[in-house]
Image (cartoon, rainbow, N blue to C red; front, side, top):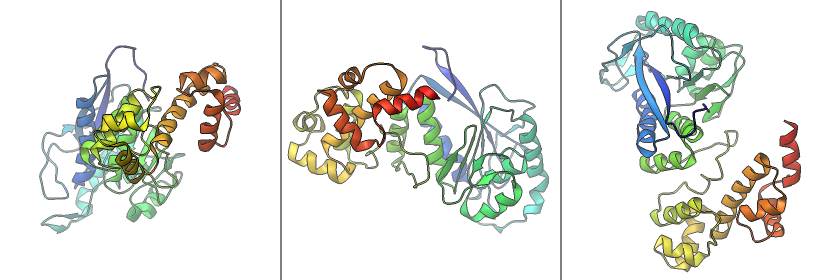
Length: 337
């Protein structure tokens, strides 16, 4: 996550490399996330430019691309470089000769190796990891790619730790995703880091997609858990709790917000969110308490009070349902680091 001056709008330059035969969904999906992110909030602006070896390009669905700027000699500070994947089969044209694009791909690889400086973030989508790997930019990092190109990435980046069966891998300043739509998941992850979980959630709801994770992927934030549904009444109730987790949220109070009866809300919450109303409220309060435990020296009693619990005992009971380590031990572990 990049730092900014408090109160000022941060701008994050996003430089999208357009390879030959780009998979259009690799390009359009994640960039639609950024377009919506710029509309949803004003604290962070993603400033997108498209660059490549040629001003005109082709895409997987046979649609031509134009307005591609030349590969620049340098990149601005704090830039996020995005490398989408490509395909060997274009709609209406069948299988193409990859060798015809060897020179353009080699130019991208040389450019990546030259301009992506230490500390600069690089995101690849699908087979875009192959270009990053050939440039040596995945050496020493955990990474992934489309399942069909895992072996090719292992060959292209022998010093990288290539992981299978992952939607995406966040390895610090190297962020790689699996096939095609996983690029949307990874970009939502980046937006959550930069512009907040509420923004990422709003975008996911707008795109009508789930916030997916596999067992080994980075876990969803507690603020996003239970939101993988499209039921408007439950989202209204969840938005209200997220906006004010300290309020005394009875089922009746949330039912009024949701425009539902208490009994129906309880049923819908279990069906749609996979947990009860009380469990959901407590999860958000525990998330708030977790931040207070790790980022302050407040007593456990004060943490409980500021997180909305009636007592330290109630807080510890709710905490122990979600965490194997006590608040005190968690604070000790963080103070060591």
